[in-house]
Length: 463
Image (cartoon, rainbow, N blue to C red; front, side):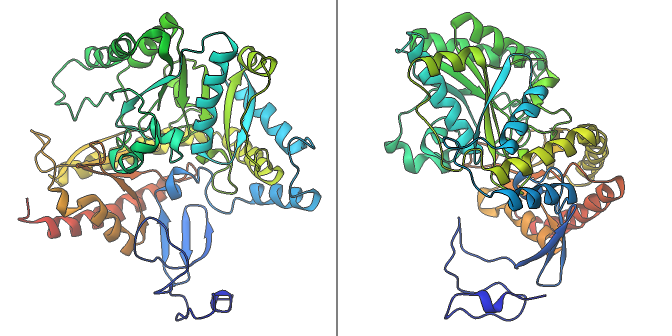
């Protein structure tokens, strides 16, 4: 198998199997990783000769695991027919078929699909569609989208305007119209002494307070992650929260947008996370696990009643070149069938319970673990300096980032973020593919424990 040396740009050299010290590529920060050689299931093999367990599903993406034969077969078959068909010139069976199958899995009434290439595009599509719907229905004064802090909804300017994660949004504030935020319910981080249902209702009522403060005739929508993503560390709201949010949106004629980019396609133990609370939104944004990393794919799902209004008013003024790409849709169709026919949502529930039990045992062993939480296989481990006061570890320790590096060295891939608006607090996400087995869960927990032992040694006496 080639090492890839002969494909590197002129002037860049490296030893076999090693990432280059210099590269024409750049991403978020300095540093390199090994070149990928191959991947199967939850395992990734680097050209450095090491095998890594993908306990992050990339970035909560690879729901059906790597190199799934059914998905690869569907992509190859589509490639042999057509690799691209622009949506305004041709329909494709892959796109039409995927849309039909997705609609069958949606709550009643959510029956139209608009394809995009990723999560930020899906959220952006929802925001722009909501605005055009308001204009089409004579409600042009409505343009504000209330969201939560902390939250994450994407990196494009529109999606970033409703994101509540200061390090990512602050540099671009002068380029965006500020959008109102309410507090994300985080029972543990707020002390956990208040009755959980009362706490959840109090935080839901913050939406009504914000609507009245902003002026109901200016508010267009509320966007929410049904289960918190990386910005909060898999926070699960109290049971009454989503139902009250739905009531408030209905009361003021505001659209409810569910950002299921991370939580959808079986990740939380149901195809949509909103199913856990039987709450139906007006619009849904999906991506990540939708095509599970095999091709860039996302979607906005909307009701016909709204789509008709927008199209009749002159059309939906929005779109992306690769929307509905046949190869991406063929991959997505195969992924969805894998999730449904193998009932990977159920496996997420079963393996999620096993993993959660193991994480709770680790919490008892390591005093700097303050909380473990999540739903299905969307789980997080919160690090603190003091469990009783929830005092954070000194930010300069970069504890979660350091744990990620230690784990990587031990062949375990996990994901980290700062818990409290991106400024402080530490957590890691533990989100393996939904195909994980009980033995693989046990291996994951063993490697994580070994990593925590090493972290404990490094933190000793430093906080």
